[in-house]
Image (cartoon, rainbow, N blue to C red; front, side):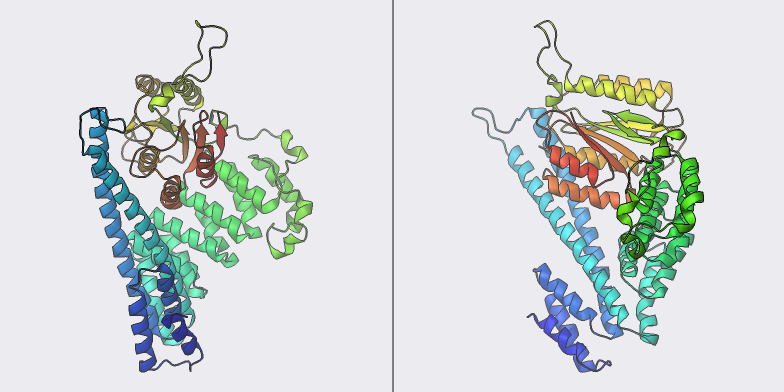
Length: 528
């Protein structure tokens, strides 16, 4: 048993008031083990300190959180520097025609340098992820510490968390840690702070974080604040509110969700439909009139699925089975589709693989040597033509291609006018299939586009839906390991709320990776 864990058990058996001597021992044990390389021992140290019923424990955990945030920021800066150097090294290799080995009689340090930089980036990513896990551990420990305090000590300990969560000028990472603490804090004061953030905070990312915390708390008393967020100006916040209402499982949310379905246009129609199905076990698709008709009839006796009361009757709900009356009303038609994947989105970003293998034919000649099947890239271009053709003018879109490097058609999301669609298609047709497959760079650049807000009349909205296509595996770039790529997307998309649909073309595509990329981000995957 570790020293910190043994100390925690001893202190739990001690009187409620912690003596200066016992506190000194606890502080020393924590300081010793928190520097250990073993994450398990650091986690035990934080958990042990959390059990010390003294405000000094909460204060020490908060100082540890602040240090951890600074460490994560330093790692992020270091990684950005190494990624930039790696991208430069890979560009030089590509231009020199290096294909994985030096030519006869030629010696090159380029490949070795790129390999070292790639390994360095991977190491930093792993350290950064571990640091973020520990940050969550410290936040959870702080919540536990606060639960052992009462009266003036609780007020004193809780004050630093409330201030950090509510201060607009505080770093986002620090506010996130404070909100994470509130998510695990059972005190009603935590609910009040989260409610005030939802009402008054100007940072949409912080409002999303607050909604995530409310969802984690599963607090039905917070339903009214979450319902109000269904009318937030930022679609990301509305998306987070829809998800939170599914977790809270309050009957009060059904009518507001139906009302929101009636007024929303675009991708959130899909989100609300999924939420209503999850909460009710009925499926009237995107037809607000049918949902209202059902509610007027069954609402008074309805019990939300997933609650203790509903568990006994869940099987009778025919979860997610289409209702016989659903065909009586025309639902909102999808805005567009790509390789058969339909969406209601009005903010669509296409990310396409244009590596050398995309120049391969889609199959053997159908009847003879004079007739050939189209290339994989030509098929993708045809799919883009159909998808853009279906987008209404009030939609916005962009096209991004990646191989060894990444290219954007336009700087940000652009109105779907006929002229813009034709310009995007002409640009895409002018790009040859060549180079390697930098999946990581393609996805990261996509999130940069999704994060661009309204800056002028030509760049009007964030992307809320991504169609991602590849015919291979990640072969170059800062990160080529698919687990690390998935982890980075999870981190970035926790605030972006972008749905990612994936298309895997040909037998060389990593279909398992693409299926996970889609399913973890609310999308669908198709194999072609």
